[in-house]
Length: 220
Image 1: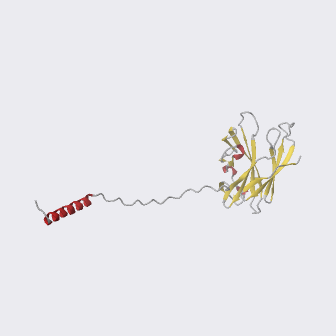
Image 2: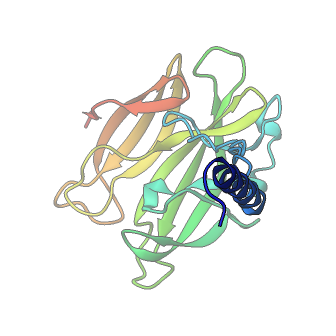
Image 3: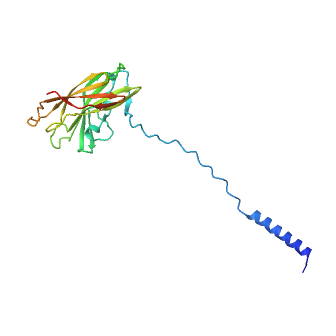
């Protein structure tokens, strides 16, 4: 068996061969993972944005109202309610359950913001579709406006004066700069259901593309 320097040289050579073989057999490191580019995220709608319901003609009197949905909030219905050509739709109210929504064809036009483009006020109501033979269980004036190229819902103007029984009725509206005046008929305790004897007005102020009610004022 070799001794001394020769043995040392042979051992060194053997170790070199083993190290080279190990390096060849070792697994190659995986390439670094490149993070994928995140896609666009949907932005939340602005809390103050009014919902657009379609394109707005230059004059809202040219609107085909049969194709325009109505806001359901006045009747406890979330979102917009599409109605058919007769002005009716079935929906589910969070307050009253199954209801029928009605939109009349009596539409009032007037300019509140001085842009020479009239807004539109549409009477809407909901009932229990004959389940209790009651008349409307909730009513409102839905207000539409042309904002840019869009037809948007500014809001639902509901009765503000409380009645002793039944719900307060809506009588008519007046347009004024920056506001809409709603005339209401409210029930005194001894009024029959057919005939509310009280009168009140509520001024709704336009703030941008929203409507804000003032306190009702009893006039009789």
